[in-house]
Length: 133
Image (cartoon, rainbow, N blue to C red; front, side, top):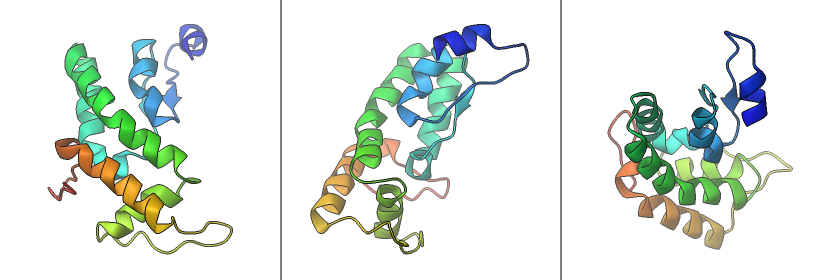
């Protein structure tokens, strides 16, 4: 991605499609992220980006490292969008059912993902102020 950012024409923005690459991509000239994790941590992702753009690399890194376990859990437990829809449904948001070939998480998988989400504490927030922790 560094080579892409280094060779991009003026006015061309490079976006990350992988939540875990948000901060590293911005560090090499990327613009932002198309983000699954923002469904449960949108305010934190915005703070991460704002901190980086404002020169507060320590805060950007703190948020980035704090969200990495959530990102990993959402991206590796099952095929996207199963984990994020499962989390949203479990939190009372109507994310809807799954259509084949997608199937719900097992109880054990859901418990594992929810434990990881809850462990992120205040990084998991919504514009409405709802928190999972």
